[in-house]
Length: 165
Figure 1 (tube, helix red, strand yellow):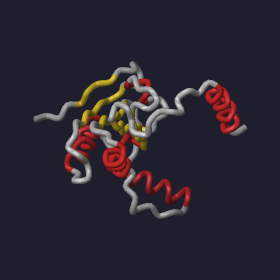
Figure 2: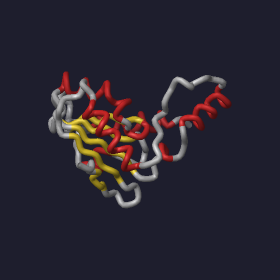
Figure 3: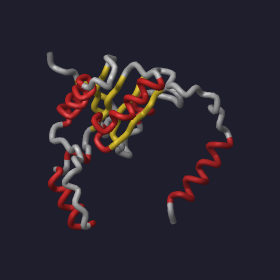
């Protein structure tokens, strides 16, 4: 059975007591979070967010270059003035290279994806620092506080990643 049936049933229960329909469009805490899409990471729970608090932008690895379009929209149209980057331990992005995934897609799907960078990384802390720098150097991103963290999937704790001076 498809999970869509379960999702529809869960939504009926959620909607029956839903009382947040009047939240404003801009996020109340004026923050955008760029996080990995990993199912073990729930950015709202990890960071203590509620509906309406923040924009949460998710993609494989929580890569900021892929999230740039959303960050610009978040800042320019919806007033966010801080960015948090959230990567995590045991990330799947540590397990492959572009060449490996391109070969897999070519072999299994018969498609050439040599023009796509899948943005894997070999060093977790460096990936956070790299993503901070991408945003800081982009002329499209406002000069706002940018913090980076690593979420430990075994303990639930976050560790701040601080750029070296």
